[in-house]
Image 1: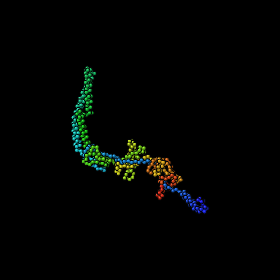
Image 2: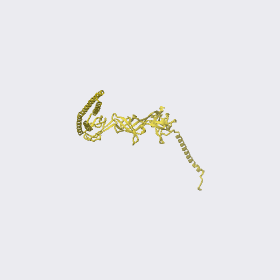
Image 3: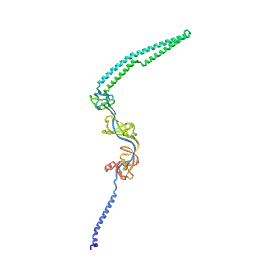
Image 4: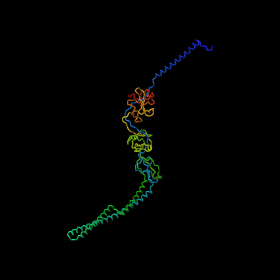
Length: 442
């Protein structure tokens, strides 16, 4: 028969192979379960970090920006006349004093013109002196004699009036003789008053028409002479300030054009670092506020002070220009150098401070967080509000207490809930984890 049922012997023959398979499967399952239980019993690794308690202390806001150095004073010396340069007395790099002669221009024509005008001035002085000696004394003498004659006539007429008054009282003369004498005395009094006024006026004015003309000619000659002398003086070029010669574009013999600088002098004993900051930042500053600058190629910080805060905003950038006065006794600072400036702003005396390196950006976007060591020894995130921040320290306004332990090193990228151990710097070097000596302090 085609479909014959298997016999008992056949079924028994397949039983050992099936049993072996079942035993292998059971052993595999037991092995997997045992490994899984073993994995579950392995503890997660503990991360070594450094941590500190927030401290209370002062912190000063620092305003950082770029600035450019300028000399405290600068003079581009311009000739007022066009003439060839006769001689230079300075070179680039020379130190000069205010009023020192730095160059002379050819001036023979101007010297001749000044001499000509000096002669005309001297002649005008002689003419004026002659007019003063002749005209003025003569008029004053005539006026004085007229006054004396009027006074003598007045005195005589007054004496006649007194004599006729007595005769009239005695009945020796008629009344009209007395009246005639009185009228003559009044006329003499008027003549005397006029002569006196003329004499006094001439004494105040002290001049006449001829003398006035001589005085006008003298003033004109003097003005021309002073103008010619000024033109001559313009050929002697002097520096108005003390400093260092930084530019001298011409050589002797070349023509110096009026209005074009022949020598530039800078006073670099102090430098001015000019910078622009936001208006709200300037409210923390005042004249004399401390600052520092860093200069490329010069090691260390250079002290400076705020010397000017512009009273108006820059119309283009809506910022405020601030000047820092920087000492430059050795002349190492050069005009035009770009520097980095740090200005000291407001100070909070009793601020809650943590190291700035402990601060992290919130994963959600805005805001700041720090990692702290919880009471269970696990890392935990804390959202914080930040105040003043410097490179070393940051003021915490909200989110932390002085008793918290803030992870300073090893907290970046650390998952919340991770077991941590506050270790030392040596442990960090050996284990490759973050560390701190805070545990020893605690």
